[in-house]
Amino acid sequence: MIDLYTASTPNGWKASIALEELALPYEVKPVSLAKNEQKEEWFLKINPNGRIPAIVDRDADDFAVFESGAILVYLAEKTGKLMPTDAKGRSVVMQWLMFQMGGIGPMMGQANVFFRYFPEKIQAAIDRYQNESKRLFTVLDGRLKDHEYLAGDYSIADIANWSWVRTHKWSGVEMDDLPHLQRWVDLIAARPAAQKGITIPVDLKTLQEGDGKGAKKFAEEALKMVQR
Image 1 (tube, rainbow, N blue to C red):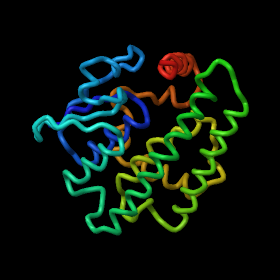
Image 2: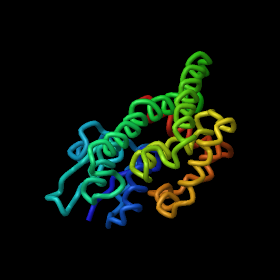
Image 3: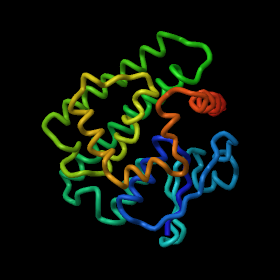
């Protein structure tokens, strides 16, 4: 059994989608970011960086893993699924996983901060992070032109990137001109594990559409989090 400490964010979805895809038994332990639970002493013993997601593998002497990318690799290696075992195949998956960890996630995350959360709209910062996010989307689109998935078969690289790219409207980044990326987004969205994973621990579907009172409240709570 795996304990999943998580919240409804793109990084959190990476872990929940992977657990669903791998059909591993797990128990959800919601972490309230609004209440700053991720900074409490009990959680810092699991993840000293005070971020979600984190897992504790009860079947491996309560082994704790933090950082979403590291969690994906751990789960893939634990099960022998969602990542090739040969050196080249594994490297390709890791390259596209690192692409998300070092590019897609940070750039979209900053786009969210300046476009959605900060009360002061700094246009230069908004443009910087939205433009860089769009550039990275273009890289994905080019890769997906001749590949059904990012690294051969469906893998943790797809899970990681999709969890962020699917929220592009929240970041204010359009992708109507990227048909290969849109095809891939729709392809993964049709997977039952992906559909289930993005509802854990709660379903934010209405908020992700970027309108209504729910979205406003979500943005207000997010502002408190990024200021801590």
